[in-house]
Image 1: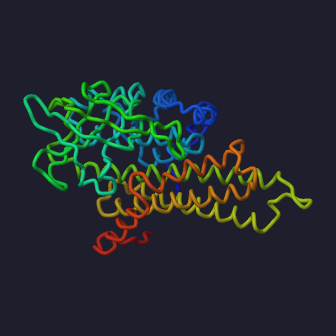
Image 2 (image 1 turned 180 degrees about the horizontal axis):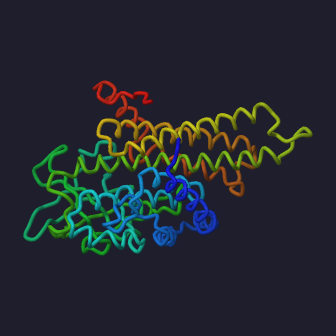
Image 3 (image 1 turned 90 degrees about the vertical axis):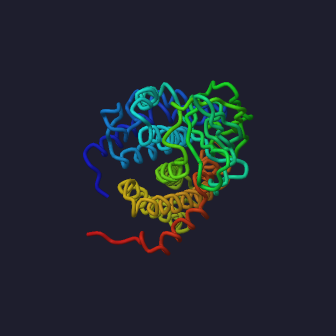
Length: 386
């Protein structure tokens, strides 16, 4: 796939930045569970936050593909920073850009784009995961605004992010109706946080619960109109799924490079293990799926705003790339043999970090439902273009 001159320049520059400023601290941050706030600040200083926001709103005015290339590069060097970056950019910051009033954009975008503040996305609840229409958090209208009560779980950056895009429903509504979006400040009275979850991977990307006990949100901090939250969330998640595909590609690319290096240098039976067919086949499959995944993810980024093709393209990219990443990170451990099971050789971490890409922002099963339903409707079937 051809890149524009700007897209190629951005990809080259961010790879260099990640290699020098982000990757060197990745392993230690993972061990110590250090939230990558400093990395977001560095990315903001170099113009990698708010990339798709128009220049007149303070953003970079670049393509969605350019941002996708950035996510992939960050994930190659530090998967935890990549997920915080993706949530901040594709779910929170993009929501302000797409749905905020001019006053809201002027108030919130500058600090988000600079990396001074980090945004989070709060949709999932204990009984509302894949079925977001079942959320139970309530927004009770009152004088001057709304009082939010309820709870959210599995929130990236809970207690660390500075603002949260919270979805709640108006009293007396059910299903998709009445769901409304609000921007809630970290220090809002009545907002508290559960303990950080102990996770399989992505240890530096803190995950936890939000507890909302009569949190007062002024009308000026409601995003969009009442009842528009469900469609807003789905639209944002389509972009988020492209970001997750890019995360998976970054980890798969890293697994391939580590495996190639090991296969060239590790000797058994008098020769490098890369000379053995069993190892070559694993490397060939990794490289093939990495290339195929890039084509899917980059295409999804190009059609992000295509109402007919965008949703299916994002689902296909996330499904393929996440499952390929998990499959091949496991293969990378096998290439490394016993050393692959040890933390020192890094591939075991890649497997732990990659697994969640099959789960968050829509499981692989949900992605298949999205693709299947689109196909059955007949309005989004893939097509070849000259």
